[in-house]
Image 1 (cartoon, rainbow, N blue to C red):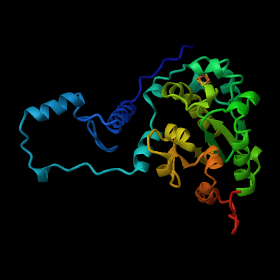
Image 2 (cartoon, helix red, strand yellow):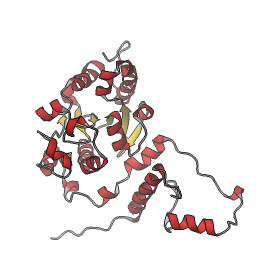
Image 3 (cartoon, protein in one colour):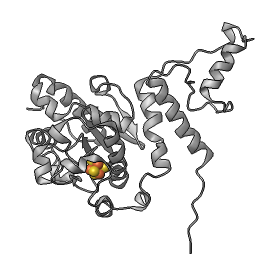
Image 4 (cartoon, rainbow, N blue to C red):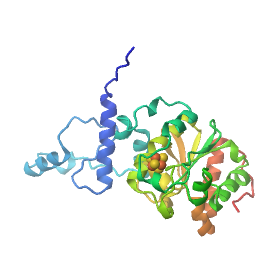
Amino acid sequence: MTSQKRPPQRETILESLRDYLEQLVEEGLEGAPYKTATTSFADTRSPLRASEDSAAKPSSLGPADVEAPKPRSIQEQAATKATAAEPGELFSPYPGLEAVTTLTELREFIGDCRRCKLWRSRTNLVFGVGNPSARVMFVGEGPGAEEDEQGEPFVGRAGQLLTDIIERGMGLKRSEVYIANVIKCRPPENRTPEPDEVAACLPFLMRQVEIVRPEVIVALGSVAAQALLKVKTPISRLRGQWYEVRGIPTMPTFHPAYLLRNPADKRHVWSDIQKVMEKLGLPIPKRGRIR
Ligand code: SF4
């Protein structure tokens, strides 16, 4: 029996279109229209044409008739974006990915990946590690030298600090949580991953999120937080507040590697982790802290 692909729902297409327009607004394109999630897209003209039209025709509406758009919080922006399918996800960049239902199948699907240029600089592809049914999932940026060498995320000094956060801070075993990165291959000289590399690898992380389906995600550092939440806000402004990714409560906080250079900020991470523990119903020690 041949399976027929159903055309994407109109609402899903509009959702993706809204994401794209909001991204244009964030990137500073003047004339890109702002619409809230509940507004219907009755006016389907091109945003630039619509803007030209309004400039050409004197408006009959007085100032009192025009409701100025309310500025939205970062959470509202992220909530709209992180729960919606990306255009690339809607028209699956990797056919068959959505049919993968286990982490083992996903690793097989990724295979000897060459979908972005980072395959050239890797020793090992670093997929992810931990409990496939974890209650909490930690997401970092990408593998460093030791992770690349061993094929496991967070095994260097930053990894030791993450283990301390999990075991000493949260009272869990490292093997009880799931740990993954936005990108699976080490960038040369440990540079920050480029947007095309994040875009190429992010569908794999999102599938990991969907398969593990944790109760809470902790996004470690700006690359992970910005990729998951689809915003460009610095981590210093994102951290400490709840967002949602695919309906899963998500807490951004500083990356352990940053904490190694800025130990004074450990208190902020401990504060964020306590919120995660509270959400998971874990007991919070009265005098606990991250060392
Ligand atoms: S970083 Fe991701 S997309 Fe790029 S080659 Fe590695 S696994 Fe493939």
